[in-house]
Image 1 (tube, one colour):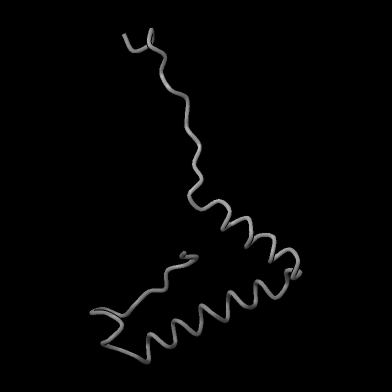
Image 2 (spheres, rainbow, N blue to C red):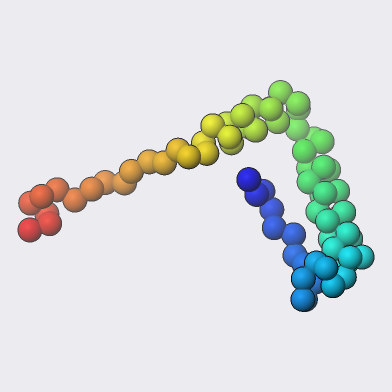
Length: 69
């Protein structure tokens, strides 16, 4: 499950470890700062609901037989 994509340096992460570490550190600090303001029970409920939605889909309206003719 992906919540965010963290950019890599040109050529890939293996080309510039320091840049990758800085990008990852900045992203983690940002997310931790945001979620530290949310009560634990709310975080747990959001996480639970997020994983419950995996694999769930809803079907849109389908055309009736007369509409397709």
